[in-house]
Image 1 (tube, rainbow, N blue to C red):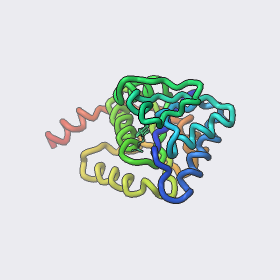
Image 2: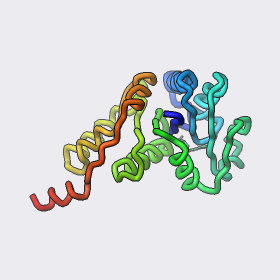
Image 3: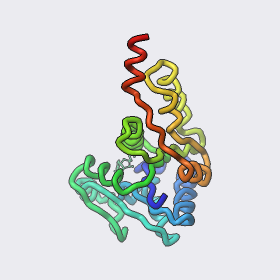
Length: 196
Ligand code: AMP
């Protein structure tokens, strides 16, 4: 793992635990010399993790659409801030530059980015690890819903198992380092279900 993309809230969330987790993950990334790729904002958990990695001498690449720079949320002090034309370009570049993807707590933007990389993993478009840092049980209800997808036969158990979950940053990074991608043919599974 040389570079990991972190999706997280452009808000800090309620209480202090989410900010503490963003800082803890940033510290681990810098310590393990893993570069941070992220959305390039200076606000919320995004700003916290970027500042932490930078302060500890780590590498940070921010990728932000022009429209958000104008709204003055860009972390303009970043040595590597890339300004792109659209949200689609941002996600494509984040994906291309990263060896794995972690979601910290966040809102719709975070969830949307996480589910995109998960569906791309399921389709075999990339073979990179995708994980969730489940800070203070923030994602419990979402994880339970993913299990329902499997139970109701809309998702393969093997695809569910691809999603790496932990509540500690160092353990999550260790699981990323040991991850191997297993190709599973979802189309064949869907056909088998149809014929059964
Ligand atoms: P949210 O979780 O809704 O706060 O959105 C955060 C995620 O979506 C980040 O990972 C960003 O890539 C993107 N995003 C959403 N809103 C913003 C914003 N105001 N500034 C920068 N990125 C944002």
